[in-house]
Image (cartoon, rainbow, N blue to C red; front, side, top):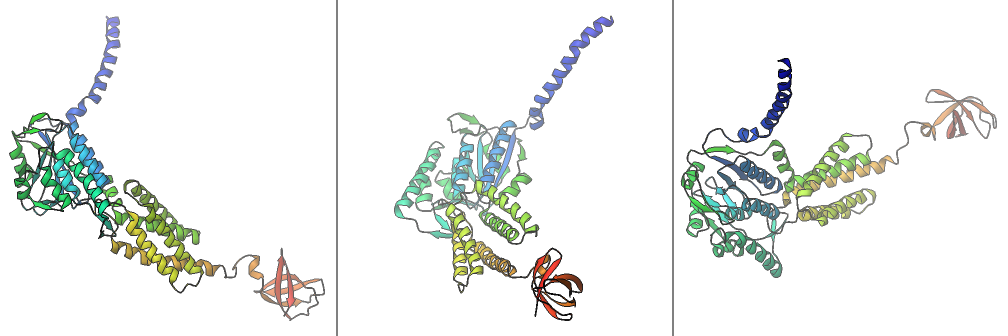
Length: 446
């Protein structure tokens, strides 16, 4: 009997291991999926500028909804627009999402402008709340927050590219591509009712609950042509929020914050190099510069802007070294302002460093940079305060007579030193140190 028990144990142990392994692999479905039989609706949010971190957040949210086997993803939106590359990334994720996506411009007073217009029209269901508007998707060139007139050929090229991209999904969604294109060509904007009457959106809803109520039982056509009937009765709503990391990174990739980090980083390292041993500016500057380089990986940075900022720093250094009567400082300020304006290149959006931020950063930077360099140049003329160099040129009194080419004693700073001179010097005479050799001073009479 004991042998039988041992034999059975040989099978029970691997069976238990297999059961535990299966339990760790499979239960994530039940852990992520509600135990109730009610459908799951995942809620995502676009609130603010469309930028790379937001695109990453939406991609993760859509992936999470697919893992949860959600019945629908609702993206609430209130945005003035943003980066075209991030907008295209979001549109692509919506088009290939295995879970149907509804983009809902809300609350009342919100907008889905510029890049938000493309995102709205790319969804399986486009909806707006009363009192909202969308459109105004004309490509513009913005330098330092100031719209710039584009060359006619260049403007036409950008418009044609934007319209082709818009048509590529509005036609398959069964929306009105002709009228939608006027948001690009004429910068036209639409209220919720106008967009609904023009068949650019599918419905107007007062709230998310009202949106789900109207969609329950509705049959929609997915981007791949398949038909799907939405079952949303008693749906469980789960909100997918930005993580703390994504919230922090979303602040870093804002153009104004990026510019400030870049300038603080350069100034901190500049301070450390000109005043070694201070430590704190070097540490802070190094951290800020690394964060700026991280943001540079996401933002469409123009190298001309970076070079103009470095040129401004060179002008400030030269101003401290040479007398230019302010010409170099003025040139440095202009160069840094232009660098800030050109730093973020985004011809399809109004995304860039604002003029007021660039001005508020440039002026203090110019003052500090010139002041620090002048301190460095002035310190080179200071007499050493320690070491044997301190004794050079110092005056002392002869205590023990100095014979010609013979040693004697002198007093300097209250200390007795052995000294030698090329000529005889009587006690009480005042002498000046001309050189130092170890612990012996060579002097000459005054």
